[in-house]
Image (cartoon, rainbow, N blue to C red; front, side):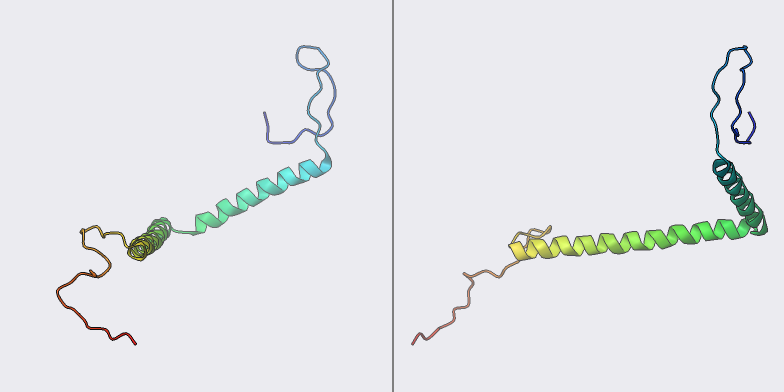
Length: 112
């Protein structure tokens, strides 16, 4: 089968039976060829780019994405830690996050 779109062809199939073939409008044919032209242009531009450039730009893109992943994970951990602290939950090292109210030091308070 070719890449050419069918343009209002009617007739008989190979078996001799009249089978309808898909009809394409001139606009569909135009869009098909425009897409093919854009694909060929991208391939031509890609041929100008050296293989090392592609390799290093891919590595740079991966490192860039990893940097944001680290930043987001750090922010998530900080937010979770602050939520636990605000709720008064114990930290991962089992230290209470709020000060004890029954410590050794006693403070005298005058009430008037």
